[in-house]
Image (tube, rainbow, N blue to C red; front, side):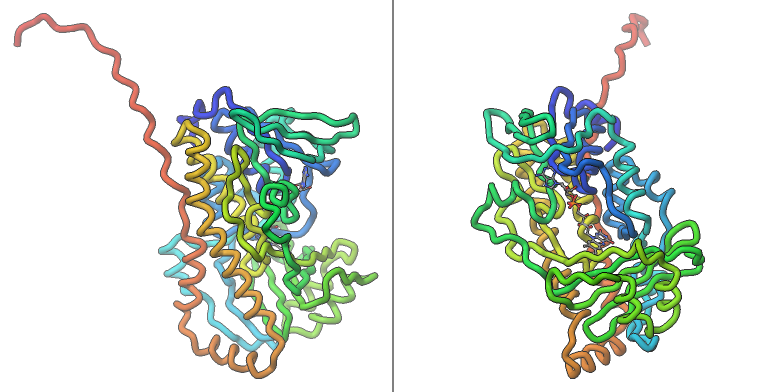
Length: 415
Ligand SMILES: Cc1cc2nc3c(=O)[nH]c(=O)nc-3n(C[C@H](O)[C@H](O)[C@H](O)COP(=O)(O)OP(=O)(O)OC[C@H]3O[C@@H](n4cnc5c(N)ncnc54)[C@H](O)[C@@H]3O)c2cc1C
């Protein structure tokens, strides 16, 4: 957020619930706008667990708006969206990569970095005193001109008043279910994702790419400093856990084309993560309730199939701060946020679900048809999809009010 708007939030206080990428990015933008921010995080430490994260151009532009784009880029590797294209498990090409000229023309790229680095960069842009861990928010109550947030700490129950509350408390948001009890909780997508970082590999030589098998996907992306981030997706019943998750990845993906076996082998087994993927299948009727604004997964939990969950959280933060910079009246600004964010983010939830169904299909005949269609489709089909999601700009900021030139001495001389 530009310094010219630095006074837009002066004297205002935002309470941000949740210290994930969504909550921290909103806090960074609001802090730069001049708001006092209090971030309440339930966990006992502000942290983001391992593996990598990919951020398409839309998220990079959001980070620029929030003032941390360059700092994040400095820790990232860059790849073309889709990398070297789509392959089958045998290595056979399913879809050609996007046309580099098209990507350049639309400014489309992906940056990839370890999640803790993104989280750390956001944390570093905030005053230490604004971050509170071990603070479990239990209730948010509307009061005149704001909301009261109640939370539990080791030292007992506390409350804090905010002119606005940013609910960034993740997929299973307590605030969302209290405000919209009629909206069913998120549902399991049917698939689970292993993630890891292969070490000692030349990340700069890795173009990135995706491989689709029967009901399975393996994706790989470059990271800076001799590392490659990978993820492996499979249809699994909810909640299943294995004593050795690394062995599961080896068993399911170890015979796929190069360099997949080598990447799995170069990953420390104890650092392989696995997460079941959930989505908010029924969209929220609004992202705003009184002075409470929903953001990130709390607003629109989506599957990871488009790699857009955090990108959308960053868009949310950039838009929230832009509307608050342009409109002093908080309820009016929040109505603008809802109008700008809900249609786009909910369409991306849908698109992500459809992508998951396409990728993870297990029915043989449908797979044959899918693969033929992918092979004959012109590259522009995929390019259109990437551009629709990635070629996004945050809303324009208001022009700074021109400061009148100091009046010079009035000339008394006649021409
Ligand atoms: C396998 C996988 C891969 C992914 N890859 C990508 C990717 O490459 N690119 C991308 O853009 N997205 C990706 N995503 C999605 C992305 O991780 C999420 O969308 C993003 O992290 C959401 O951030 P958030 O801050 O909204 O929620 P969270 O990260 O869930 O943060 C919510 C925070 O709120 C805290 N909290 C919850 N309840 C309370 C409470 N009552 N009081 C206080 N604090 C509370 C939690 O402890 C947590 O820290 C992926 C997701 C998965 C599962």
